[in-house]
Each structure stands twice: as structure tokens, then as C-alpha cells.
Length: 128
Image (cartoon, rainbow, N blue to C red; front, side, top):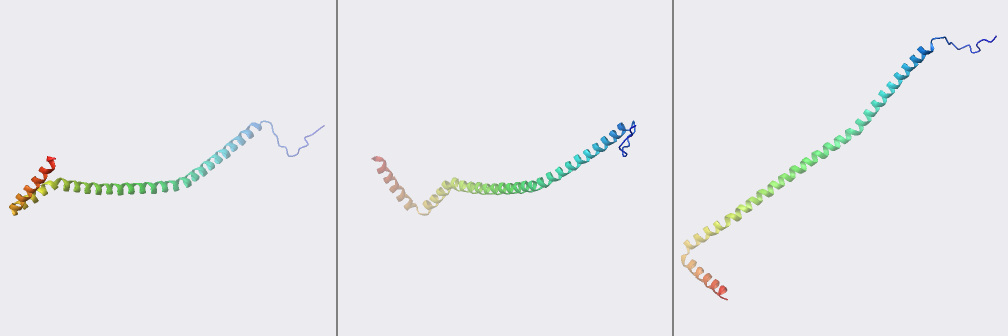
């Protein structure tokens, strides 16, 4: 009669399902730990990559804001100068009139002579 030739075998009836269930639970726990470890490693890698990118974006945004502020300041300066020049040009006729009035009041004979000379020249130019 033949006996079991494998002395290390400890098979007992009814233990296969419990052993398989225990191994499956252990395997599922190992898989879960592996997934958690991989997820943690990926999160760490993403943070390592994202932090320099955030710093770069912050620096670029700051530089862009400073550039816009400089442009706005320069535009305001140009607008102020333009406004000043426009005011000066619009006031020029009244200044010329005031200057002419005071010259005529100070030197009436010269003003009459200049008016006659100017009238004579304009008359000659338009007569042709």
C-alpha cells in the first residue's frame, strides 16, 4: 500500500477555502498598500513639478503687472502733456489778441502804419 510520499504536506480537508480566502485578503491588502504607495509617490512628483511652475507663473504675473503699471503711468504722462499742449494751442489766439491789443494801445501810429502796409500788400496779392 502506498502512503503519502510528501512528509511536509499538511493538507486537511475543508481548509482550502479558508486558506484561499486568507491569501486573497492578504493579496488585496498588499495591492491596496501598493496602490496607496504609488499614489503617494505620484502626488509627491506632481508637487515637485508644480511648485517651480507656480513660482514661474507668479514671477511672470508680477512682471506683467509691473509692465502694465509702467505703461499706464507713461500713458498718463503722455495724456497730461497732450492736454497741456492742447490747452496752450487753444489759448494761443487769445494770447495773440491780447498781445496785439497792448501793442496797438502802446504804439497807435505804428499799428495804423502796419495795418495800411498789410492792407496794401494783401490788395496787391489778390488783384492779380
